[in-house]
Image (cartoon, rainbow, N blue to C red; front, side, top):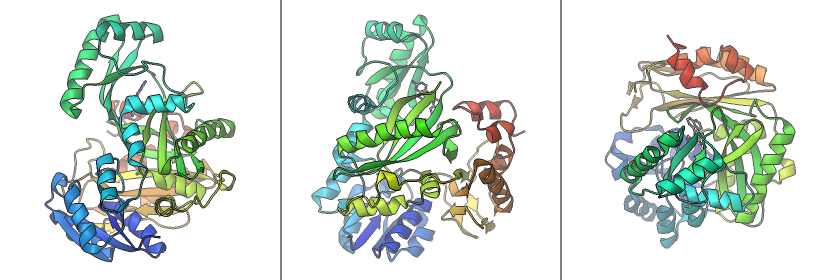
Length: 449
Ligand code: MV4
């Protein structure tokens, strides 16, 4: 096992990793920018190193500073959390060259999944169902038109280097395809320095359902059920829940087994998430994330598995502590991302938290690095904390979420808590009847006015 883990992140995920490390008896090193000198992850770590100025590019994304921080403190492993360097294959390679373990998958797998064309090709080879579309990249107008006619309109053109919704163009008919292709290529080049794009059938009203997987690279891989992340705004997830209100046990087992077998074949190491669009009873692979995700607590609440503990142990060479038959999904969990934003305009609201009171009680978890008097810096994402609630049934979970939201107090800044108090009382949400466009439509039609 590792002696000391450096946590290359900040905020609630840095605390989450710190807690898992401490429970394994592993010493922790926090790193921080000058803007985060009084952050909670710095206070709770055994040691801390300042790695640069507030701008993330010069601190949390600064690979030489992070390597130096490992060498100064004698850390033998790095947990990247999510965001920042968590899916950077060069960082994984650089750590390996310095004999430091990257707590995550092989660099090769990060690289494959980072290229959305390569990811889809790999998924298809492994028997994972994909959205119909081009086999690889598309450069020529005639080729794009031929593929679009073959799969049928509407189609969507996506950047190979994109993901998370950036660089997508929908073409509804033959007249749109040339402009969509050229615009997508130009925007992809500008945003990612890579103009490679691919084409897919555009699904009109899917849900976003993702499968959590764990592999030990030693021949074992399992799935831990799904999370339904359809409630998003501008490609930012707002509310995540599991199990999905749209699935039954046999569909879950079927897609889960496909994912687990694929990860076994790939000899995937660590935690991963396979993202699907789900429409009319069918799953379509879109992307794979090779990191721990913001919404991982939903899965932890319904499985009882500590995903970060598994990540650390697997990276240290251990085998999976559980087999597929040990995974029993129990009850229902919902996560609300409480952001420092106005609840209807979503304008960021950095500033000092005047009072902070978090809900508690059976089935209630709050993952947050905030505290009374904490100054939210303007340089990073606006997450104040995650409220995760578990119940024996979805309805019990909704009622528990309602009372937890009513207990939660964050004064001094705007937060999205009022949005969640409205959503938890909404009939469509209570019925589980929503797709990826529901939230934006709700907001556009005055749902929060
Ligand atoms: C799609 C799609 C419809 N059809 N692909 C957006 C984020 C990226 N991960 C994939 N995205 C989409 N891909 C096909 N073939 C619609 C979206 C999409 C979306 C997906 C998940 C959650 C919210 C979304 C909001 C708008 C569009």
